[in-house]
Amino acid sequence: MKMTQQDYQHMSDLASPKTKSYQTIPMAFLIGGLICTIGQALTNLYTHLGLSEKDAALTTSISLIFLSALLTGLKVYDNIAKYAGAGTLVPITGFANAVVSPALEFKSEGYVLGLGAKMFIIAGPVIVYGTLASVLYGLILFLFKLY
Amino acid sequence: MDYLKAFLVGGAICAIGQILIDYTKMTPARILVSFVVAGVLLGALGLYQPLVDFAGAGASVPLTGFGNLLAKGVQEAVQEKGLLGALTGGLTSAAGGVTASILFGFLVALIFRPGDKA
Image (cartoon, rainbow over all chains, first blue to last red; front, side):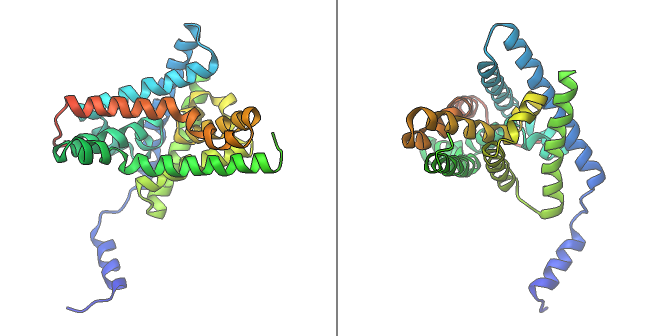
């Protein structure tokens, strides 16, 4: 059977389940909003305990990263992610999940090239392009004396 | 009130991510990269900080907030150290989050067993 790439794409589109955006988008909104609300509760708690605004935000991030790592280890996070989509991906907890999940998965390939390297398979590019963007911004600030 | 604002703004940012997944076939890795870079850009243009001031964790918890943090870090570092700050500012402000991810990621990978996600 001969087919072009377009034919194949068409067949694959017909065979794959349709994305139900009327479900996925509200779910992402709900779960993502919920994670941010938990973040707000933590921020209020840390501010109440006397941390500065900046430190409270950082401690909130670290707490959420810890919770996400733990829930990933317990296989809970990925089960929520199945329904939440971007709701669990876009918050900082999604970044932590992207670090922990491959680290755990590839532990069997050793501690250096397995756990150590695969930990950054998704987080690596995020750090690379985030840092590059920040350097570019820094250069612009410096060159045009915008600071 | 601050909980409602965090919920609505945070939820809206995540919904934008879901729209991108549903309609552009972007992979999750590309979404993460785009959101952080978008956060740096919006932070650089001074557009993101007002959102953080309004919505608190609703704007700082999503990865765009992480990008905004990088932009803020560079801004402060360039002010302080000039050109050298352009190289140190970003990662310095990201250090807490990145190091926490490495530490907890390592510990969890050490303690738990890999297995079915179901």
